[in-house]
Amino acid sequence: MVRFFTKSSRGQIVVLFAIILVVLLGFTALAIDSSVIYSDHRAAQNAADAAALAGAGMAAQNMENLSVIYDNFSCSNPNVINAMGVGVNVAINRAATNNYTIDNDVSDKNGVQVTCARTDIGPYVDNYVDISVWITAPSNTSFAHLFYSGPIKVTAQSIVRVHPRKNLGFGYAVAAMGTNCSTGGLHGNGNTTIHSDHAGVFSNSCWDFANGKTHVYVNDPGGSGCRYYSGTVNPNWCSVPLVQSPVQLKPYLIPAPECKTLPTYGAVSGGTINPGNYSGIHVGSQGTLTMNPGLYCFTGDVYFGAQATVVGNGVTMYFMNNAGFTVIAGADMTLSAPLSNGYPAIDGLLIYGAFGNSGTIEMGGHAASNYRGTVYMPDGTIILHGTPQMEAVECQLVGKNVTLEGTSDIYIDYSGATNYQIPAIVDQLK
Image 1 (cartoon, rainbow, N blue to C red):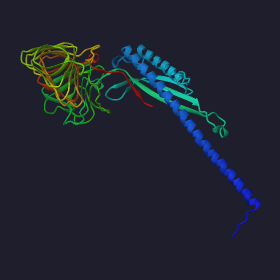
Image 2: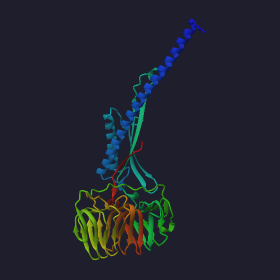
Image 3: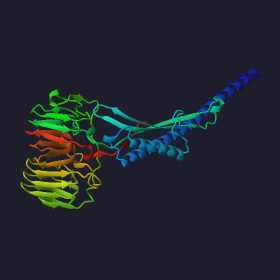
Image 4: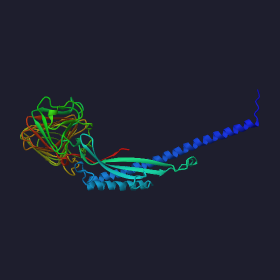
């Protein structure tokens, strides 16, 4: 069959083709402009991220330089205010290097805003400064103006939070990180009272004091008190109310110290020793040992017998493999962590068990013994023995499992300044 098209039908085809062509061109223009808008937004977002991170990084460095730490942080502290101002200026300058002009007015969503806050999150008050950067810029579209008369703009926002230097374990004097009471948590054996001054006691899981008469007495003006995340507790185990924490304590990865650069000495049994790598130390009853300041790395156990005399000021002891540390009651112990520029020893860190080390740090002594600095065993056990009148325990104990035992009172006089502190942290929120 032969079909014939009239002139009118041919005209309809032309009109239909023109309409389809316009629609196709519109979709093409939309695709092109969408790519341009996406690219412009991505560039603005990268610039906002870079500006916020630069401002926050410099604010953090400024707080470090001015010795702003958790304990002295406040939004009215002149050093904190100074760090905030430095953060704003650096963010503005960094944005300019990426060809974006911003100021300290964010009402037009094109500037920098810095805020300071102290937020109670349960086990502690979180101190921080937020650097917020908005960038709003025109998008150079090719076709959108045919359909929209106003300017096409993109807006990006970035928020970076700065936490000041703070102590491990939420700043508690004793912190047990084990989440299962059978393999971790806080335990008490014997008939003893733990006196914790200037900081509280925290456990991720239970307070297992059921087999003894252990009791915790907290004297902390800051109000950290006694906290637990989950597990079995008894309100009679602490002098202040045992409060459930809404957040869990997570292990913090302290970088491993530089042991490979140190000389190797093997095993020793006394005398005066220098920093280095050791396969172990065994000082028997009435033996003596002096440790010169520095870093000591151990692949084997360290043992100090009854009536041994040990002095080590400005030392960090790092335990690898499953090496452990044992001090028998009656030993005369004077051990302290470095306080400033102890490298390769770690300031404020007295004993550090490597991640994966499931060994035990067992601390005893007598009335004249003194431990000062953080003892950190993220995968191991810390045992502190109550010894009559051993009042000079200036440590922070943070371990997977922490056991407090003995038949005498244990006195822990905590000071954040003499224990390990996590450097200022920069955390991107948005």
